[in-house]
Length: 165
Image (tube, rainbow, N blue to C red; front, side, top):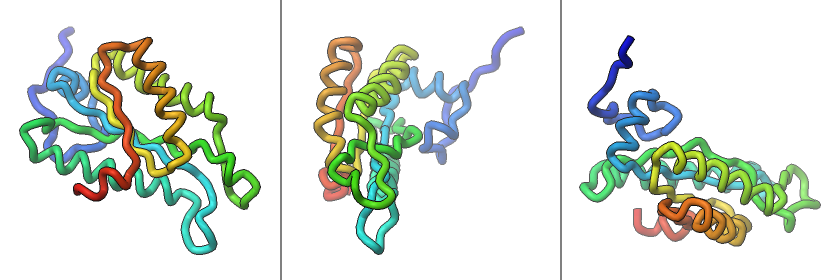
């Protein structure tokens, strides 16, 4: 029995989780950029939801993927399922906050990125909606540099990307 194949990815799909496994093979062959939104679950005052940072990261990641969809530089960009917990010990005593230990956060990011690289993807951009994740993302980048030297791994806060979209 032969496995069927597809030559292209449905043009409306921007979310990695909506791809079929056949489309994932095409995405890898086309050197797709994968965008990983990361946020936090923490207080944002009395008027904003606990997931504010994750919501922002998801929206900016999708805007980046949509912007790139029309470009010739990286027409294949897909948004991975987000990591909705971050490094928030400074909010730990405030209602609703769930904080990851920085080592746990680094382990999650490097595991996800490492497995994607091992499966054939070579470019990952992390978009963080939470400033408390920046230092841990720097550590994750260094870990991945030593374990997956062929992986182009970058990260940016939403503020750096939202200005240009």
